[in-house]
Length: 350
Image 1: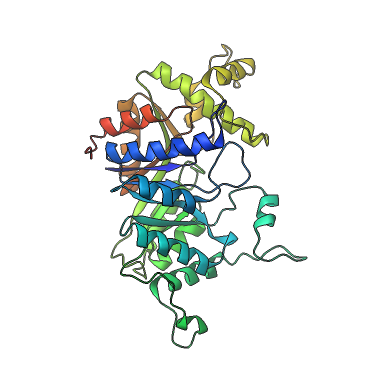
Image 2: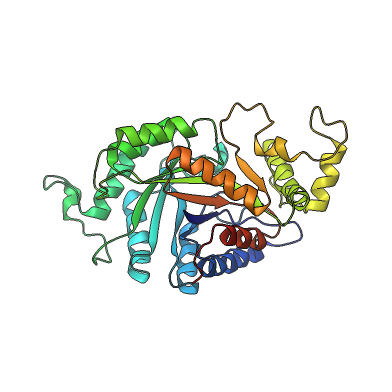
C-alpha cells in the first residue's frame, strides 16, 4: 500500500508561522527518506494556526529540497483563480521538477465567507457564481492544449512548453466531486478527514461511473485521505491526540489560534469532559469517530499504536479499493508518528 502525506503546515503554540513552514520542509525531506509516495500542501486562508495560504510557493521550495518524492497541492482552491494562471504556475513547477508535480484541485473556499469574498475574481451586488465545473474544464484544456480550433483560446500556448505536465487530481468530500472526477476521467482524492459521512458512496460512485478522459487514465484511481496519529503506546497516542481534539473544538468556536500543546489540551478537556465521561479523562474513541454518534462508517482519525493504526487504515483502504492512503496529522511534533507509520507499513527507505 502506497502512503502519502497532506500537510496543512500547522503552527504549534509557542512557535511562529515561519517555523511551521520550516517544519514542513523538514517533514517533506524525512517523508522522502521514509519512502512516502507524495507530499501535498493544503491551501487555507487567514487561519493563524495553518501557515499555507499559497501552496505553489511552498511546493517550489520542497522541490528544491527533495529529489524523488512527488510534490503537489492538496489542493489549489480553483474558484479563487484564473485557470490559465494556475496552468502557468504548475507548468513552471513541472519544468523545474519534471514528472514529480501533482496539481490537486479543490472547490472548497479554504476560509470563511469573508476571506472568500476578498479572494473573489469579480465582485458586485451578487455573490460570485459557482462556475467551478467550467473552470476545471478550462484548466484541463490549457494544460493539455485541448481547446477546439474555433475557440479563441486555441491560439494560446501556455509556457513553459515542454513534454508532459503536472498530474491533475480532483479533490473532494462530496458526491459532486465524485461525479465530476468520474465524468472527466480524473484521478480522485477523497478527503475523508474532512467529512467521513459520504466516503463509501462517493468513492463507489466514482468507480462505477468512471469514463476515460483527458488525464489518460484507463481505470479509476483513488487516494483516501484520512487522519492518523501513531505513538509507541496507546496512552501516549491518547495524550497527543488531545491537541487535535481541542484544535477542532476551537475551530468550531471560531478560535483560529495555534495548535495547543498536549498539556494545555488535556487541561482544557479535563475542565470540560465529553458528555458521559464522568472521569474527566480524554476519550480516544470519541475523537476517532467510533463513539461520536456521527453515523460514519469509518473513523475520521485513526489513533493508537502503529499496528492498530495500520490495521484500521488497511481495512478502510481494502473495503474502499483505494489505491493509496494519504495521511494528515495535526499535532505538535509529527515526525515520530510518520516514522512509525512508515516502519509498520514496511515502506522502502530511499
